[in-house]
Image (cartoon, rainbow, N blue to C red):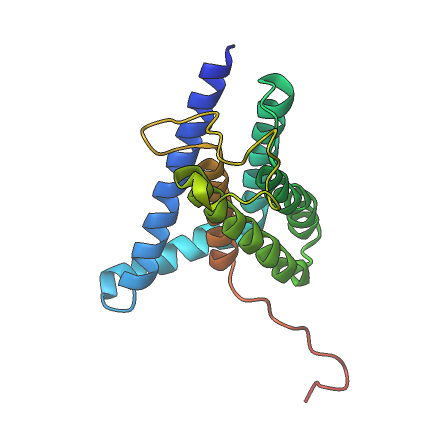
Length: 190
């Protein structure tokens, strides 16, 4: 398969992620105003919630595989902002995988922090792509600038936009998984 085929596949996955995030946000916000949407949101949380951490781990794994393909298979040299996004995404595979397999929900706050940092870095990278004058010589390598657009699909999906889609879907899944209940100790038990 060609790089063009792979990037189309990744772009389609990013669009799917965006649709799922928007649907979840609409249901969550709408559930505050509509009984029907509240019921739909409750059903989504009941069905997806128990698997949400595992699904978030799968999203992180697909994003990681995609980024590795783009650098190793397509030979796109990752810039500094790409590397920062990778530093946020790659550990999520392990953290979320361990949380899903063991039920250690106390790992989720760290995953939320990493995904949030990655999402913010993706937003900065998108701004640098669209406004190259924002790129500074201290943050980006002049030989491999962060403003290079290696891929653009559907008129807006670049590599950092695809990464942002992944980070947002991970954050959405972690929100659907629900709050982490702190276990009570013997001293705190009534």
